Image (cartoon, rainbow, N blue to C red; front, side, top):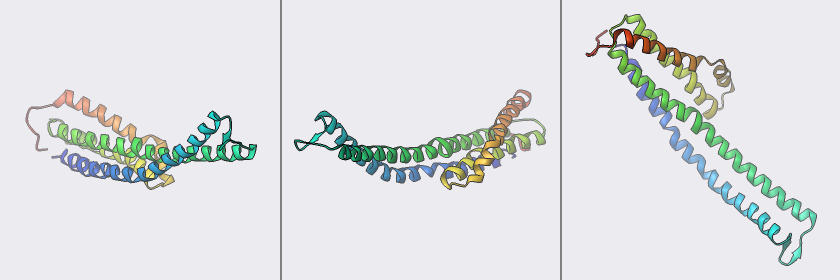
Length: 185
């Protein structure tokens, strides 16, 4: 069965991309400390402002206020950078990879029920696999392993185009030759 490779690939790829969940959980360790640090520094700034820039009943100098402000800004920036790293993994390879893995499984099942030429089934099958690798696979390499050449490949748009073409061809093939029983070809 031609669709079998998509089903197998889909399940194996789903394991790979779902495994990014624990990677993201580990990234949240830094997140928790950054939130605490931000709250400490920004909380101090809020208290200073509410007390008309006095601490311990003494007026603060411009230098003391500037230093406190700098600490607050740097803690906000640190938190934003950590959140950005988590979001790049969560919104990129994790979400797209899971979706494209499931698309391969679904496409593989549909291919099994198509009574169309073998070359057309192969075309659909390979469009989905190549599209997945060239899209979420490159996202995985670029965001998780920080390989810049993968961003160049992503910029071509070949991955999403292959997946869209696979969806279109699968839709046309389903219109032409969807059958009730699983095909052996």
